[in-house]
Image (cartoon, rainbow, N blue to C red; front, side):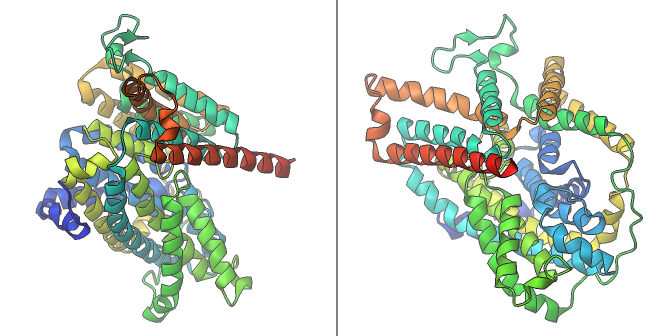
Length: 500
C-alpha cells in the first residue's frame, strides 16, 4: 500500500487515541531523560535494556516507547552538562561549553529551560522533515533488487570506517566479530546448521536481543563497576529558578534554533554521523554567524540553543536512511534496527508498503515525543537535576536485574541469559581495549542480508560477478562505499598525524 506524506501521518493516528499508547510515549520520554541525565549511561544502554521488555507489547506500542526513550536520552544529557560540567551523553558535549558557565553565573535554570525548549523545537523540525522525505526515498528504493541490497549491505559495512572514530583497524575487527557471530545458525539458503555444535538453540542463531542487551547493557555495567560505585555526580545541585525563558529571549533564539535544526537534520541523515557531530557543527556555525563570537564559551545562550536544537533534530534525520534503506543513521541505528526486527519488521523500502501503519506511528511518535519532551523537561527540571546524585551502588544492580528479566522473558530460556552474560563479558573486554561496539552490531545485522542477497544475485546472473557493477544503482552505491572507505582511512591518518 502506497500512501502520501499526509496520509502517512493520518493513517496511524488512531493508535494515539489509546491512552496506553500515550502513556507509553510519556514514560519513554521520562525514562530517556533519566538515562540521559546520568553520565555514563546514555542512549545505547537505555535502548538495549528496555528493548526486550517491549516484546509482549506489540510493534506499535514497542516502537512508541523506544522512540520516546530515544528522544528523551538525547535531550537529557544537557542537564548534567549544564549543572556539573559532565555531558550525560556524547551529544551534549557542545552544550557544556556555554551551559556550565551559565550555571557559574547563577543562570542554571535559564540554561536548562533554553536547552529543553530548543531540544523540543529541534525534535519537531526533525520529525516533520522525516515525514516529508522518507516516503520519497522509499519509493525510489523500491527499484532495488538483490544486487542493490548487496551494495547497500556493503555500504553499511563500509560505514564502520565512519563509526570507528579512534581506530579503523579496531572498527574493522569489531565488524568482523559481528559478521562471524551472524554465521552461527542455519544457512540462509540451504538451512544447513553452521557452528551450532549440536545445540538446538544455536541452530536458530545467536538471539539478537540477548546480544544487544549483553554488549550495551551488562558490558557497560561492568565497565562502570570497575570505575567505582559512588555517586554519579557529587556536587550539591541548587534549586533551579526562572526555568521558562521570557518570550523576547525565545524570539531572539528562533533563528538560531531553525538554522541549527536544519544542520542537525542534514548531519543526522548522513549515515553514521550522529547527534554529537551535529551539535558540534551547529555550535561552530552559530559562533561563526554571531555578531559577538567572543561571548561563546563564556555563557552564550545561543550556544546552548544551537547545540540542543541540532542534536535533537538529528534524530529525525537519522531515521531517514534507517527506515528507507535499512542503514543506520547514527550509532543508535543498529539497536533500533534490532528492535524493529524483534517485532518481525525489516527496515527498508518494503516497510512503507508492507507496514505503512508502523511507519505512520513512527512519524507521529517522533513528533509527539518532541512535544512531550518540552513539557516534561520544563515541569520536572528540578527532579531531573537531583537524579544526578543517585549512587551507582543502587543504579547498576537495578539495570542488571532489568537486563536479565527482560532477556529471559523473551523465550523463557536460561540459554538466552547465558548468551547475555557472555555477550556482557565480550562487551566489557572490547571496551577495555577501546574497540567500538556499534560496528559489531552492524556486522551482525547486515551479515545475513549480505549473504542472502549475494548468493541470490549470483544465482540469478548465472555466476556473473559483474552484475553488481553493471546495474546502475548498485554500481553507484558500491562507488559511494569505496569513497566512504577511502575518506575514513584518510581521516584516520589525519587524526593520527595530528595526535603525533
